[in-house]
Length: 474
Image (cartoon, rainbow, N blue to C red):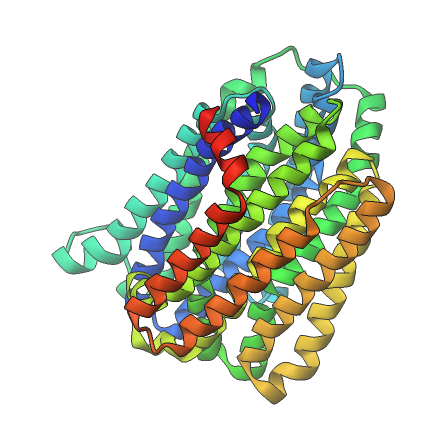
């Protein structure tokens, strides 16, 4: 239990690195949906879709490969230096090539020239800090990791409010400020925050003597390229709907869809916090005798917490709706929220299951599963969105993550068996879905919905009483 206690402690700290920035992002969602029309919000979403795609491409799975080899190698300094130099060289080449043809490339991706230049700047800066951030996690420094992440998002929020709210409201004189093009300043804020983060992490570029090893680079790349492909497929699964909907249904509908999609942020926070704490823990704990039992235990409580969040968020959806997206123009897509919440929970379970191919160095399976999901996402969106509207995209997202979760489970049990308590896990999932459906049918009667939340929590206490007592004692 002491091992689990450390895992829980690190996850809570990493959770702060996730929760605080995401909570600040919630503030931004409210600001952006209040300030921007749905068409402008669609442009904002498109910018970050491209950012997510190219971020995966530029880091090419090196962060995960770094974790894998850093945790088990005696040559930790060489691994850190080689990974750092590799990303530094490729990022510099990327910047030189793309900036030379920036006008043509901006036209190809249909982005405003200024937006495109800011995008390139953000991408390069964020890529350069990937290994220093990974180093902080791998060496057990969650507090520093968290502090820098909070500084980053704090700057983003401050600058967004300065540009989008303070200047127009108080008539502040600011050079070249254009109130008719507010979305530009969202990207400027992001660039400034990325630059400050880079400067804060520059000392880690000189943490050890820089030494490059072709042998280590080959090991890292052999492990990382399938991770990169899987990451690209994941970005497609997460964002293809926001890329396709404006083509089929228009930017206004896409803006509303993207705004309501943000209501799934609470589940996303939980999943990301888990991943930040779990990935280094799983690698470091792999050699222990009881490793698979520990993984099964963590999975069960991940599902319990995720299901509790599902019921809670749906029970109080109307309240949360006003907190995040209080502009009624966006509410035309509010029906997607329960579907997206469940989809994100299934994605979280998939991430948990995915440890089998990372620990066995069979990352190609992760690539295959993600490509399988991407094919479902692309094909079904292309054929169904024009016929059934944006709601089809939400159901396709759920179907994709359920499919990936099921395939990963069966492959994992074949290659790296983990004794998951399948009966309890499925039971909690079914119960939470049933309670959520009842909550949706209650017409937001908060007495009934509060009772539903308490029923779920009561069942957990009843069924897991013995383990919960042990955990609390520890």
